[in-house]
Amino acid sequence: MILVTGGAGFIGANFVLDWLNASDEAIVNVDKLTYAGNLGTLKSLRDDPRHLFVRADICDRVALDALFAEHKPRAVLNFAAESHVDRSIHGPADFVQTNVVGTFTLLEAARSYWSALSDADKVSFRFLQVSTDEVFGSLDAADAPFSETSTFAPNSPYSATKAGSDHLVRAYQHTYRLPTLTTNCSNNYGPYQFPEKLIPLMIANALGGKPLPVYGDGQNVRDWLYVVDHCSAIREVLARGVPGETYNVGGWNEKKNLDVVQTLCDVLDTLRPKAAGSYREQITYVSDRPGHDRRYAIDARKLERELGWKPAETFETGLAKTVRWYLGHQDWVDEVSSGEYRKWVETNYSQRA
Ligand code: NAD
Ligand code: DAU
Image (cartoon, rainbow, N blue to C red; front, side):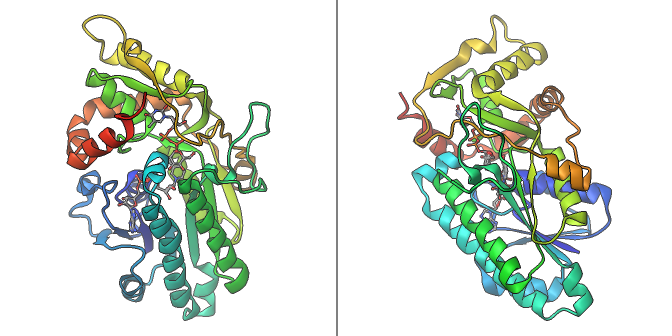
């Protein structure tokens, strides 16, 4: 079986659902269930013997050791993280704890378990770190996209802690020969994304008749990848990636934020038209994110060349699927938009001019 951390969050849960759709290999899913983790996302697996959910913190070495000893996974995939840049600006401590200390603790538990395996099992074991393009910092308009050899230059507490965890993973491979793999991916979107992130937040606000808060001038650029494509990339890297290597994952979909929000409004105008006017009329400019990275772009050619991976969705097809999913799953959105979420919206948006 494989051990997945953070499998009740957005990408982790999509990965768990996708994996069990395609394979009978069981998953131990270890998640602390922070505000970002939702078991409702996994309710279709409630009676599925291939899925074992364990509520635990990746900083808890005792719990991790017990899980390794009991389940003897052939691989660990680390999705667990504090993942939202704006929250890292308001409160970086949780990011240092989970992203750095948590990854370190997981690496230590994995190393201890791996050291006692047979030679053959040692060779086939994998530790896969799910990371981000944000570790590379910010690009200017004319710069080439990030490659696997781009320098780390993280700019937010979130990206600094992800960079720190990526460095630890690298060091465990180099020093102890733990067979690690790292993926650095661009912005994901799709079903089950918590409505603090750009696309689900804009869908929720649009439908709720609220302002659509675009930071700064709306000209920041992100590369967008449909989450199911990210899951397929991770599967390929786990199956055939070379230990010690890192792989950039991207959608070849560079978009300015304003263009993303306007396109989203157009899709909603078609699928759920307002009584009068367009959702575009709800777009509002608000003060910028401190230290806001201007542009991310990913060169994903290594993954295509070496492992034959390419995204299946374009931005247009992925966005249409995403909007349809949110329109059909208002119950999921209501479930996760708890008191804690409302408090966060107040914290992040009430003081923005
Ligand atoms: P998310 O915030 O939606 O989910 C994170 C999950 O981790 C939650 O289920 C949460 O409960 C769990 N978690 C948090 N702290 C934990 C701890 N200490 N112990 C155990 N579980 C804990 O995040 P996501 O968007 O699904 O991102 C998953 C991973 O992918 C992260 O490592 C993130 O850095 C990376 N990533 C995300 C994106 C993106 O666009 N969302 C892009 C590239 C990489
Ligand atoms: O690039 C990969 C990263 O993408 C992941 O590592 C992170 O975990 C993930 O959260 C995401 O980070 P971003 O900061 O790019 O995503 P977010 O959805 O928060 O913001 C996307 C862009 O939209 C960014 O330029 C900020 C802007 N934005 C965001 C929000 C929430 C707005 O203009 N208004 C908003 O209300």
